[in-house]
Image (cartoon, rainbow, N blue to C red; front, side):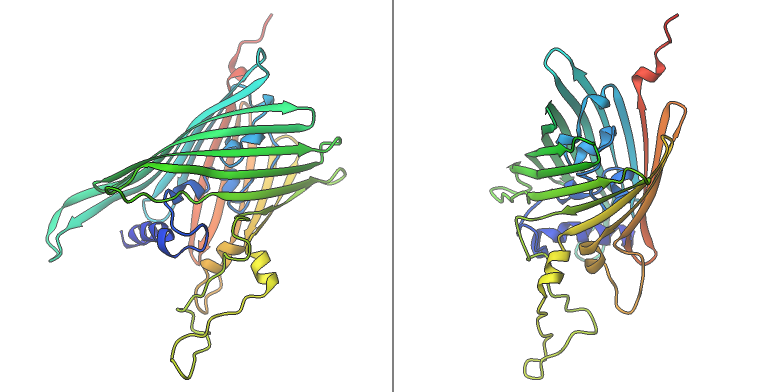
Length: 348
């Protein structure tokens, strides 16, 4: 219960202390919605595969190859916090356009409601939802798309509605080994605020991605630059660290002077996939900003690192993703993908 409540407060605290976009709401939109994205460091906007779930962060990755694909995702966070997503894609030859629809949720679980003097008054729940529709088209070696998001957030007796959009574009090299992408996520507004006349902004995210598949070995590497709308502004003072220098005059921690390299690295996510034939895929990721934000004093862990794998068995693709957030506390994500065409009876 304490861990779950702490995670909820951590998410909500982004509204007031995050350096990304200032004040804002609907931070659950940035949570890794499936196993593959979780394994690749929390972002996969430049992964060129026929995976309908990749549309969650980049609508330009929706192609004709996703036709009739269904993706089901479940994420087990800390305590009994759960998240998930379901996606379906369809291609229309008549208009040469690809469409996808899905729903994403984050369930914070049940909480005990008490009065100021500690008297138990009952229980309450908290959850957030994103209903999204995507359309994408291809022009020569370019692919472009947009996702419209209908957002609903329910925190105890407070509820809010919002509308947001993702815009994405990608370019694939003639040899299909290089992919360049550009995405702007969560351009939108709050239609109904939690309290009267207290509207909050939705933090948007400008990103660029690059991936390279090597022709004669099984590796594909990727680099993603995120939150470029706030260059060099993601790092902030962490006063609780015991290695901070203290001012002899004020007794307060001296503000850190971040180098250009530190500021640049905070915007980057690195990932790689080892593609072993058509049935096995092993994945690794490193999120530099998560590594810094979730580090604890004098305790080394795998926070910031992530890993996972995908395996194809018969008509189904199974994926697992493990994300490190703090020492001893990892998230587990599970995905199943299938294509409805695989169940059609073969013609005689």
